[in-house]
Length: 123
Image (cartoon, rainbow, N blue to C red; front, side):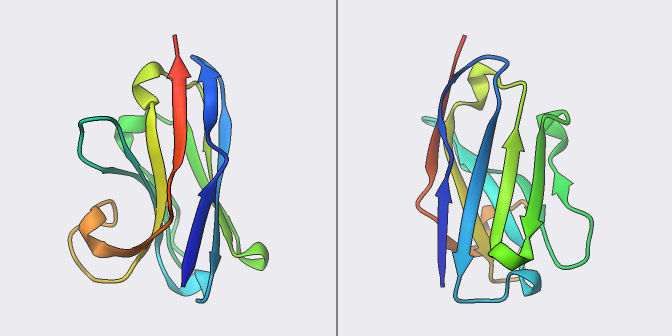
């Protein structure tokens, strides 16, 4: 099982990025995949997830600025992030949920993690 996140970068406030999470070793449709972020000095927080046939979900705290999508044929999950703010700065991770623990935004339910991709937003 592998998950590889990429697409981060340095952008100015108001800009956009598309993060990609390339997966392998499992059937993407059969697992929830979440996107998380971790700002310096803060806990990792869940921002969005997609699973099976359910509607994708993004945290209300993101205020509609992020959108998760999935291309099963490419085994890839995307996170489109827009209207970026300096407080969005952090390392963004994708992960596969492996245990039924907490909500789908709770990192504790995820057991396979990508390496993370850095997003830096300047004002």
